[in-house]
Length: 293
Image (cartoon, rainbow, N blue to C red; front, side, top):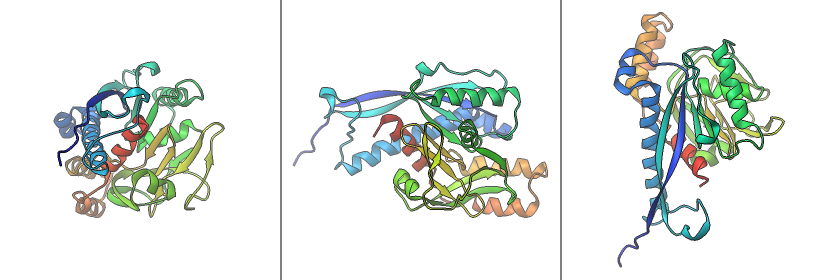
């Protein structure tokens, strides 16, 4: 029986990457900053999304985005990724010109208040303001996760348990299992700060902002809030889904040379740097949210 051919259309997703830092020199040169790291990650996630949806539909890639007479067509995401330096240049896209925003990681503290961080928090608050830009979806990663939480009025603080480094297990809540489609994830980590909430280890918590209902996505052994989710608005993760072994190894080496990590910490982290991780699951979940799948 011949395979049915489905007409293919493309939908351009305009994604703004807000660079909140630069990676170590070797990684910066290899990838072209965190813009390059996230561009590679998002394109790999788009490919994985197409493959997963095709497999789920007997080899045919379909979605229901857009309505109208074209619902039987196949819609393939095309990514238009722009770069914004929010530290030195404090440059931002016009909200009407983007479909999604990615807030990168940073070595800075999300709870500090230099002018550029205050501007970033205010920008995220505007992007999430009720009724103004309901089409915009946000992905916050590590520092970006903490910035989104701060913009929503949550507390961010130094984690007394210390650093979380390299590939680590994250136990998912019910919401996290639904979003990522698995029971738990392994994901790269590089942080010693955390979002602070009451009763964080409950399987379901309703963290209520005045206008947005927020669900926690998971927790780990020493970090109680590993992600936040508001359906149709944002998805944040404390880990680094965009990291690969070469990126995390270089960061560990640089920070060990600076005595940020001691020899035992560095050796332990390097031993997990090359482990299989589930970063692309996060990218797929984000793109599905942007495309309203």
